[in-house]
Length: 206
Image 1 (cartoon, rainbow, N blue to C red):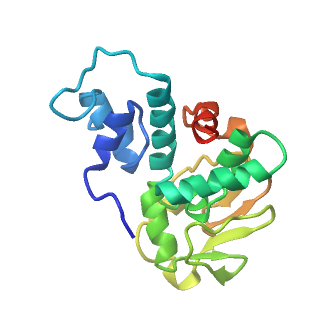
Image 2 (spheres, rainbow, N blue to C red):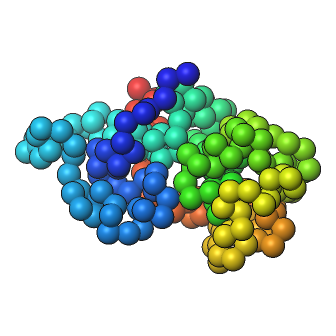
Image 3 (cartoon, rainbow, N blue to C red):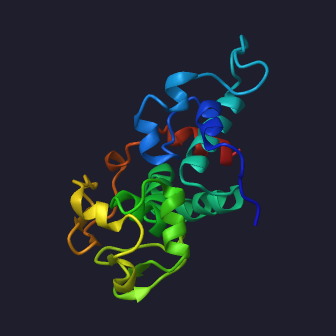
């Protein structure tokens, strides 16, 4: 499968926003958006006013890259969201938040979504006591997400127990047990990324 292999910080600069792709580094002065918040390339500054299409495309790319998805995967969430009741944009963001790799990231078990994706793929995570190694697995209300028992002493899980993790209100997390629970579906106000989802819907609905 195709995967972006260049510097992650270039993506943040290209979208003009922090996408938190490098974990804690994004919160320090080493963050590329703090040091050089302009587009990468030979001509970082453009004097042209962006077109409507360009604005919509950049918003779509920003969200797609924040959740570490390819175009086909991302479009699939739009199609599924369109079939659901309610606002398509909010449905799509809710589906993205309910990905297992994102839930692992939100619980503080990984410093970034890419790291969370690796934890899931390598078999470190269980859902309701059963090992799940599919990052796109969609969690539901009542699901219990935990670190596999024989993996809890490995990696950075020891530091997670000592840290004070702030999780969104639709999740519960016990750092001692390295275990969390989905207590509700994520609402629009629970998503902290600066997203204008209506631009994405306008782009795909053309």
